[in-house]
Image 1 (cartoon, rainbow, N blue to C red):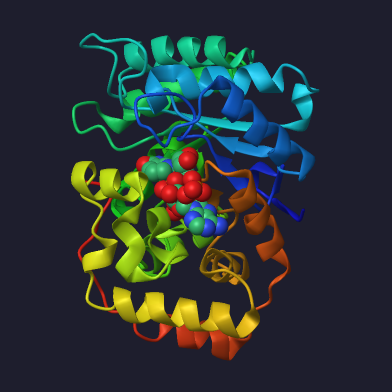
Image 2 (image 1 turned 90 degrees about the vertical axis):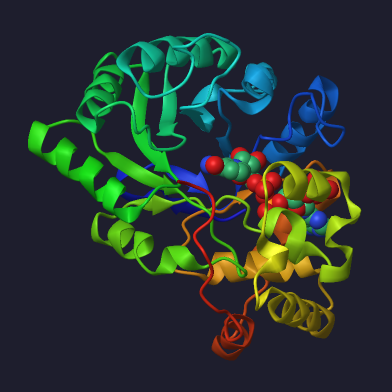
Length: 324
Ligand SMILES: NC(=O)c1ccc[n+]([C@@H]2O[C@H](COP(=O)([O-])OP(=O)(O)OC[C@H]3O[C@@H](n4cnc5c(N)ncnc54)[C@H](OP(=O)(O)O)[C@@H]3O)[C@@H](O)[C@H]2O)c1
């Protein structure tokens, strides 16, 4: 495993963050407690110390599965990130959003499920248009001061919103967002325009979600919708990567390079993330031990400048996806 520094937090994290969205129930591609444990134990054996979950993943089951496994280890070794904004296990009017009430209640519930006194990273899953950002930042800062959270982060939003939140923290002397979890992969690079320059300016670490485009970059484009997970993403989440004008060309180039190198497409798409100065640690989402091992092996693949140019060359701007 390779390790890196999570931006201004100074925390040491594995170059792979394991995404825990597939732990729980509700979809047939999800891992139950026993299967989740197997994957997590393998991840820990491979040196992964960085995990991303959320209150909303399987209504809290993901946090509970992660917490149960980490309880068998020295928890201080691990960097655990969770999120708030969408409803978790609770189902009432104040179970979602970023009001002080929601943040305080949902944080308590997340800590309880994870079996932790302190969360290493607490992220807002999206912007809340109904709560002033000052209120949200004060509630989050209080959680840091109470010792329930070490660092704050944000997920997909407009760069101007992220900057506004940073400015509020600066002006009011509050703990700032130090990480950005945004959508970024070879077939979706809109974040290069505004968000990554902002992150560089403030030494904000970046943790791209869906680094394989929810599987689109892991197999030939004609086969994208052959898994129930991909079908679900297209039908229910409206995943559009396969419809972007340059996506097929990019997918084919990933395939060509994979054949040349004798590695898998997923490994090329991940190697591009590892080589990329925009990315601190991609959040790899897999339900398979074999695919997890492939992700770790991809750390050893080095891409030349001309390989990177070849992979990036067909890209064309596309509509922003992943947030309002
Ligand atoms: N902040 C947000 O709004 C947000 C949104 C979405 C996700 N996330 C986070 O990001 C994480 C990753 O998201 P994601 O699951 O969409 O990521 P992804 O890595 O882009 O896609 C995962 C898909 O790729 C497949 N895959 C992975 N490795 C493969 C390999 N070596 N060969 C073939 N197929 C492979 C997986 O199938 P297998 O299961 O068969 O490996 C799965 O279907 C989530 O767990 C979550 O923590 C955050």
